[in-house]
Amino acid sequence: MRIYPKKSVFGWKGDNGLGNTLIEQIIQGDKTATCSFKAEYTETELEDVLGSKGEMVTVVDQTGTARCNIRILDVFETTFGNPDMRLVRGEGDGNDVRAFQEDHRRAWHETMQDAELKDDTVLVVELFELVGVAEEGE
Image 1 (cartoon, rainbow, N blue to C red):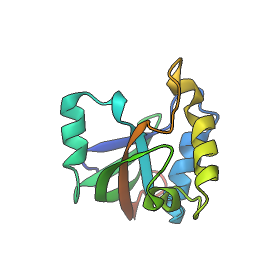
Image 2: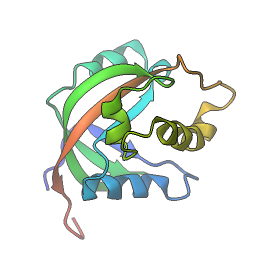
Image 3: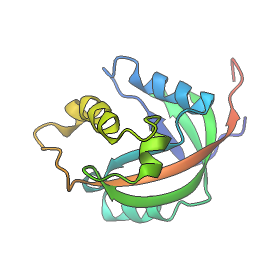
């Protein structure tokens, strides 16, 4: 599998295996979207991600191991309280907005620290498609 310069890391120390679960969902085709808080980006990072439509990205786990490649299909903003349904479906929640919100409240609890997750919290969404999976031992 080719390794691309642009990387997307799934997982962090103490995530109880969530990063690996998300990567497996990508590989199985169940996860076709991801999102982050707009407030977490610097201006340069935000410009980079918003301009990434069409780019190839290597997905790596928290140890830096390349697991698969994805192509960014679209990038846009939405709010946590009224998320775009492409995000909800792409995160594997079907049409269940509440399930999406609860899953993300739990997952982001530690990364949010003292910040409150509100309905008007802006999310940056990346929709993607799987284009390749690393072979065992690659």
